[in-house]
Length: 209
Length: 303
Image 1 (cartoon, chains in turn brown, purple):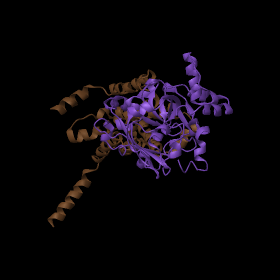
Image 2 (cartoon, rainbow over the protein chains, first blue to last red; image 1 turned 180 degrees about the vertical axis):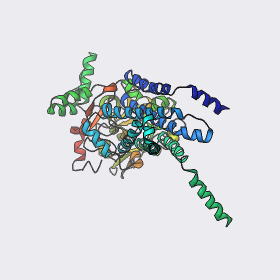
Image 3 (tube, rainbow over the protein chains, first blue to last red; image 1 turned 90 degrees about the vertical axis):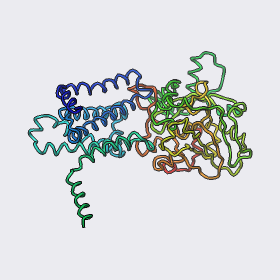
Image 4 (spheres, each protein chain N blue to C red; image 1 turned 120 degrees about the vertical axis):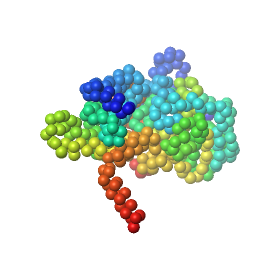
């Protein structure tokens, strides 16, 4: 019932609308930063808001397949918009770090190489680039099976994103650990059923004997 | 004894408020300014700019006080619940008169003076704060420090029903800190009880907190309830949490990086979205005052 309503509504909403809606928070954060709404230190705040929003979008993107598979909710048409906007937010997060936060070119490179949490974040960003550039119908057609394989990189990217957040925290903080837990659960849902069934059968057989 | 620490500029009655403020700014960083002036040029200009006082609003709304949450604005939101009266400080260990010292009694015995200090957080941001308070030495003298004492250990209040952050083990509670005795007795080291002439707000460590201006901010332990004189180096909270990243001394040092970020530069709070980074000064600009405490020590080993 509810599933049908959601699916029917989703069919009526054009995917382009999602691009517009998801762009709004970035504008809002920037407006807040310029008008004092992000507190006494708006640079770190803006950087953090953009990064956290990107992580949220990553998680939403990872929910699409399990929602369809386990609950029959089909939001597949929005997946590309979510993925592309995730890339946009990660890029903005990186841009704020480069231009407003670190500012000094030599220090930027030193940070990328020397600081593991930045290395992890940077690797995640670099892995997103080919995905962003192949998020179009032409690439899907052209790459065929390879497109699906390539876009499985999302799993690694999500893990790196959550790890980046865990690593940047001082002390043991709940928020980044919660993001990590959610990402791990969503990744666990991807473990092929076959491998689970195999274990099950194996266990049953052992018990029978 | 108050007014032990004197700067190159002498105290005098200045009635004109703007002149007064200007003079206070100069006093704040006499050491740093001297250094900057010696180098000359844009660095001097930067140092000068860095001496402008942060607003009361900035100082009291952007805080690290994990007992009230890990967000910078958590302390200002959550610290209102904390009751600070009555307040007693236990002073024990190697002292002649161990016991519970009532905060009001302490205040009646101390002369409160204003000290404008640079404040440098280990996270590479900084402020300039007009503190009110007294030298830690004066408080320790009340209890009578015995000659066997070599270190001072401090402890923050543990009261999870009023300090929501303590319900989660971000750090081991209660928060503890420590100083070597010579650091504790140094005239720059103070117990702050006010900011801008007002009682220190809860989120800044009411009713009484340590301020050690040449060390990273986390050394300046807040809402102190216990001070113990000891002959052994006391454990410190951030060192317990991560000894690779946080040493016992934690002196501000632009040449010794934090494991996860550079300490060469800092951003002064209050500059908005386009604030430029400024160079971090050795010992936070108090090199002339305190470098002698660390003579012969390798600061990259004893970080």
